[in-house]
Image 1 (cartoon, rainbow, N blue to C red):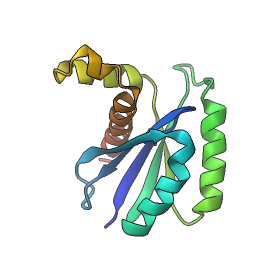
Image 2: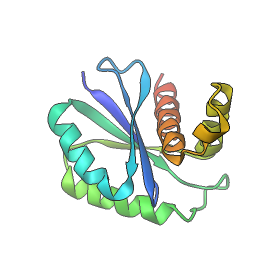
Image 3: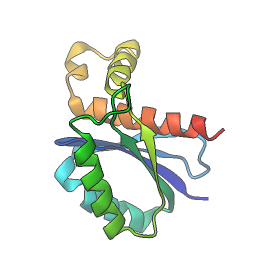
Image 4: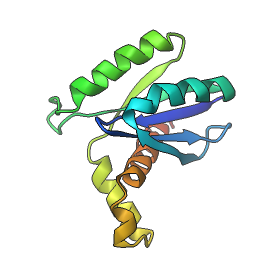
Length: 137
């Protein structure tokens, strides 16, 4: 059984989370500048068995597109060209950034640490992955 990888794709930064090999626990994996994401994914897929990628899908509560929806759509198009055999699932990412900030506050991380947008992106990816895993139970 392979891992499930989740991506919180953004215009500047992207967060990545993964499950353990048994697909039970979601943990943060990486936060990186978005222009490095395909290099990272290529290297990761070469060394780890990944059974599926879950991508956070940006939409408003009414289901309409956000400013990031076209960016994620373009990312998905390129992803499918580079990794045509990799299954992809979309997961609603509404409010994950706010939830990630709340989680960082509740975990006791000081204000200076909460300014690290890469940390927020990582936690957002974990929340996307957890939501996906819960929806499959």
